[in-house]
Length: 275
Image (cartoon, rainbow, N blue to C red; front, top):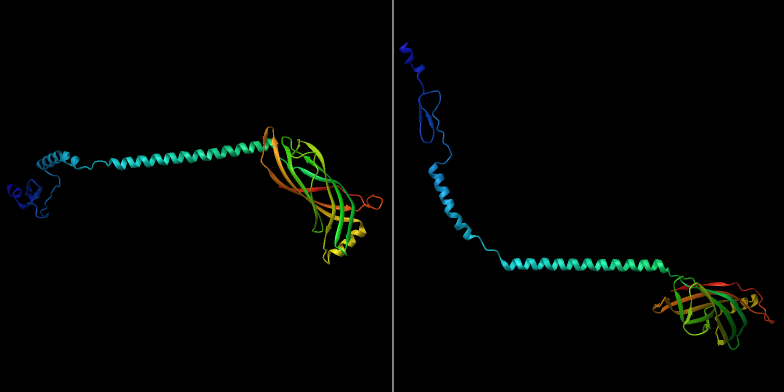
């Protein structure tokens, strides 16, 4: 029994320890392996901790100090940006508020354009002498002006009318009013008159001569009247600036017969008004 225990099969492997690992030298089936641990020793840890502890103040001393000038510049830039942003916000708010006020006033006032009608036209003379190219005419127009506004009054500072016959300018005259800067109250209609009378040297072209003969035979002449306005609006005690407006009236005016009565009936005509 002792010999069997002492044989090579019963030999117990011997492990040799060292400071860096374990070595198996007894078992021939397994080659010797060396295991090396990466964990440092206590002395090296203590050395690194001591070195790191004493080097911290030195690293703190080497940190760069903050640049005060750059900090002030950044603060100044931020302040300028905030001021500009606030300024533009206020400007936009003021513009929006002004637009809202104008819109509310426009809705309350609701301005409307005045209306002009030629209610009566009397043409007592319209003769053309081809020998001396002289045109004699006598035209009277009665005009009504209506102010449809509920809040606004109208000042008529200047009102002039020009009569034309087939692109031939007859004359320009002031529309008769009670006085200058005539004030027309709201929701009212007033009557005015314009007189075109005299003679004028007119050289009709070859196309206009037969047209004049045809109009003379019919007894109805196409007369176009252009009216020029210089007006102001008044709201309570407030007055606006001057506005220039133009009106155009396309008329068919009958010529009166020898007894003074027109050969045809004049139809009242509405004038177009443009601001």
